[in-house]
Amino acid sequence: MNIEEYKTVLSEKLTAKRYFHSLCVADEAKRLADKYGADSERAYLAGLLHDITKNLPEKEHLKIFHDFGIMLSDIEKNAFKLWHAISGTAYLKNVLDIKDCEVLSAVRYHTTAKEDMNLLEKVLYIADFTSQDRDYDDVDVMRKLADESLESAMIYALKYTINELCEKNAAIHPDTVKAYNKLMLRNEEK
Ligand code: DGI
Ligand code: FE
Ligand code: FE
Image 1 (tube, rainbow, N blue to C red):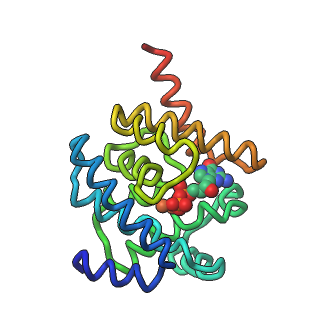
Image 2 (image 1 turned 180 degrees about the horizontal axis):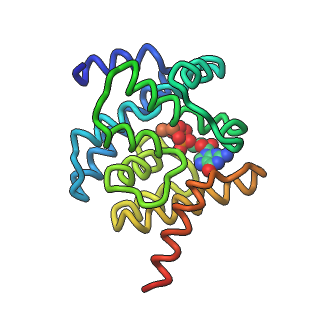
């Protein structure tokens, strides 16, 4: 499939707002990829497709997990917002037949992040926070950091997410904790 065909599929699966978000994240991921030396075509594609299952009802996610033999941890079972990163990756791989492991992995970890992320994974994770459609309170700070260094943007984004989750009494996924701890340990070494 080419980009235009992917856009058609997306526009049919997503609400207008979520489709617009996907186009904005694709543009932002490409911009950050060019800036930091990641593959800009892969970044654009990963950005475009990252939320492909975001608007599916619960039972459709469960069908994808069942069909493709995916087991969720207890934390994942209880956090519906994490499902689309997992079901989305399975959908891209098994239904849209996307074979690019880098694109698949960037999509897989775009919500929780993880320990030891590669450049493309970081670019997508940050682009999801700094895309043009975003308008949360700290977005200007986040955009400034994203233009200074990916690492400082990662730290800020993880802190922001962890703080939000704590305020909502939500569980924090171990991948998110590991991503945060790794960056903090690296800072201590300096
Ligand atoms: O899909 P988007 O809205 O574009 O953004 P996203 O995929 O980053 O999802 C953000 C949501 O995911 C936000 O409401 C917080 C939630 N989330 C992120 N990390 C964790 C988490 N929820 C739980 N329970 N645990 C996490 O570690
Ligand atoms: Fe998402
Ligand atoms: Fe998103």
